[in-house]
Amino acid sequence: MTGPTPLLGEGVLSPEALRAANINPVTGLATDYLNHFNEVMMLMEMLPDMPDCAEDVLDWAPADYTEHFTNSGFKDKELAVLAYRAAPRHVRADLVTVVLQIEAEVERAQDMLRGEADASACHAVAGLATECIKPLIAAASGAIHGQVESVDDFDDENVQAGVDALFD
Image (tube, rainbow, N blue to C red; front, side, top):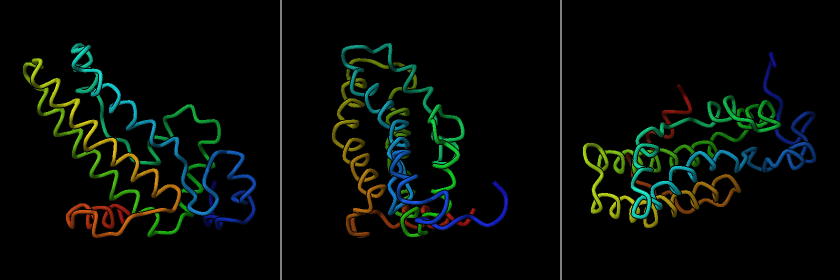
C-alpha cells in the first residue's frame, strides 16, 4: 500500500478488521510474532532429551516484526505489517526492547552450544530458556496486549536500542 499509513481504529485498520485478523485493535500488534521466539525456546527446552536439536537452535536467526510477517504464512500478514506501522511509537518501542533482550539471551544460548553441545551445555541452555527467555516472551506478549511493566524492568542498553530501532 502506498501513501500515508492509515490510523489505528479507522478504515482498513478498524477494530473489527484487526480483531478478525487476531491483531490487538488498541496496540496494532499480533501475537503471531511470538511464534518466532516460542519455537526456539521449545527447541532449547528439549535439548537435554534431544541434543540433536542443538543444530536447530544454532540455525535460528532473529527476525524483526515486519520481516517475520513478510516471510510468514500468516493469512493477514499485510494487515499485520500495516497495523504495526500505525501502532503508537511507544508501543513498538516497548516490544522492540523486550525482543532485543530475547535475542540477546538466544545468542548467549547459541554461544554455549557452539563447538560441542555436551549434556552440561544442553541442560544450561534448557535452564536459560525456562528461566530467562520464557518470562521475556511473556513480557513481549504483555507489550502486544498493551500491558507493559515499568521501563525500570528493562536494562538501559536495550531500551536505547529499542528506541534507536524505531528510527532505522
